[in-house]
Image (cartoon, rainbow, N blue to C red; front, side):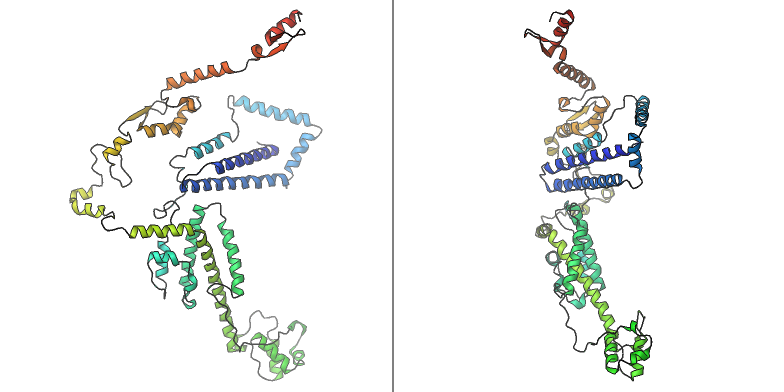
Length: 500
């Protein structure tokens, strides 16, 4: 079991390794947009892990349960030597039970992470899932949101390209047409834009950004400066009056002593009927003392509509907040939005002859027996392309896929083409085979595929390294009393003979 101090040391080491990994990740050159997105996601993973380690360290240093303090006291108390030898015995017993099992903590994990960053496999090259329409984060896929928009009641129908240009111009939609379905449409649009931004910019805290934008939009709405939501002017017939604190009165008789005019002003402030005699007004006002909701029969018609008006105002404020969030998200994806519009226009500008109608032509030409058979005609056993059809034979010959390479270290696995053969030396299968042989997979063993050749080269490298190693017996120099320079072995022989 790890001690508290050992856990702290391990977390500190992990944080330093994470910082080093993040620095290397930032310094690595990203040539494509795909590599930039994958690098951001790896950086997000390292940053989250760094924060987790930091929080655990804080908990250990706070020592709320007192375990760390007790452990330090056991090491610094009167029996510190007994504690030392007891822990030393535990370590010796562990290595006695597990001989020849030496490993550096966390080194293997971070070495594998570094290899995956420098030589990513096919799985590591696609860390994020995107639809075909999105082109790995280059374009937006707003077809679902577009269908919801054109199905809104009272909304002018537009084509998809126009929608891409105007989906954030929500202030042009009349206020009376912004119904409950419009709110669902806004939520769908915000949900997709957030999901898209989290995939292309994982280091951006979208939730905090939207929360700040919602607070700013609420302040703008209250001030009447919200885009598309002008502040409504209050009617001249609105209820006016001065509120009265009823906690100071214990009966309606005491209220009656204030007079007709003061009671009328207090009733108007609450939206209650203000007619009747002095006693009726006092009783009506005193009946509201301590009540959270007023009796509708005592309220005027205007005050009944006021509650509905406040509810409607609250709904408008929510819609204005959602629209402000859409404005903010559309600014973030402005580059992808312009690229999406160009991409859609380019697709729609193609002529009928340029479009891919091969599936319809084949279905019309093939016989019924061939239509049921999905296996393509491939007599030369050529590899299949992205469309599921065999690649051209000239391309097959160009890439040398007709040449097979066998690697004994990989378990006699056969690689097709020189490109796949050269790439496999940095992949997991060859690295695993070298690890089983006890040989490091370094550049010295490039193009070595036979086990016997790899072992012979490893023995030769070990002998060469041993010869290059510094030997103090023959290379360390000493000087006698007369200034003669001799090696260490000669000096010790002369010293034993007393000839110095």
